[in-house]
Image (cartoon, rainbow, N blue to C red; front, side, top):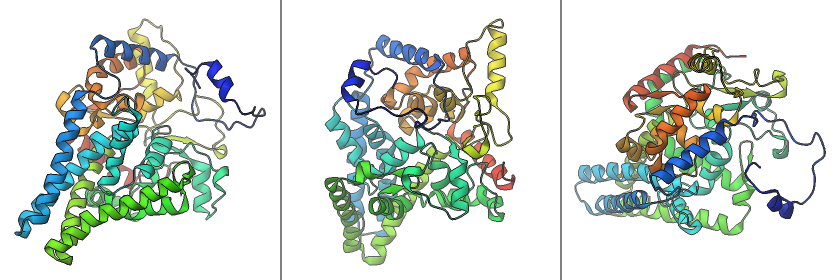
Length: 437
């Protein structure tokens, strides 16, 4: 791995792979784009004396969100008037969503603190609100982040034919978020457009509300019992008996205080109703802020697989749903601005792909950065996931300028409202567009 001393690798070496055993990757690692970007970002953080991980901003916010969550839950229990209790459930759902984006997200990325223990505790808050931090780590960090909007076509063809090959034979370079987060949705141009996809821009906002319920009761259970998440081996987490015990303990505990106690105070139907209201609120808030970052007009998608016969970085380029390559235009503009001189960056350079497949909204805004837990600066987050999200608004201009210098796309929308509208427009287009070969 780049940046790791060979002396350390020599100590950890357990053997040598034969030539040809290493599977081909979608990515190129030959450009100095990311190294230059990384050095400039570190320099900016040092200039402002900002810690890369943790800091008072995120810790103060974490205390506020945790107090708000439990205060809302407490009032939901003991408020006798049901419609008022329902409002407290909405409040609980909002705080739960922000705990997900502002605490556990950084914790499980190792960005909440320089302390591994404190990062684990922060990551555990996802279990506190009902979901599983282990499952999230597997989907988000082993699937989504490394291979954003990339789809393994060979595996998709096997699934369509009803073939489920052993986990060891599956290609890991595929983003589970583009085909698994929402059923009845077409989120990648490779997938076939069904008749009901023509209306997905209309029913998507309703479907978003069910996101956390599906995670808590379907995906978490399936991954914990099967020890796999689609093409990803989940043994790294659920192979441990202690981790499995933690999983089921937190599931039981969260069900007790999020369903059991509300049912005790408000009756079975009333308690379940409050639980559903809280989850619908949480799911809608989370899905709204997540989906606009990767499924929106102008964003690119990648495809890989032996059946495609891709041979070089030009053929590996990510493209939009219309088949265009935004990086062609940005590189032409940068070359013109630099008098015909431009450093080479392959279309499938890892860092360049993160920029091509991610979109910002309200860039540079301190408020919206805090509000979204850094999701408004999605490009910065995907390039530097282990940097605390409170820093993204301070490095945004550095990232943008470096992208412009190298001719790498840097797409941003002026507000969440504009991004949301463009996301719905994009879903409408995907719902009516034919499958891209």
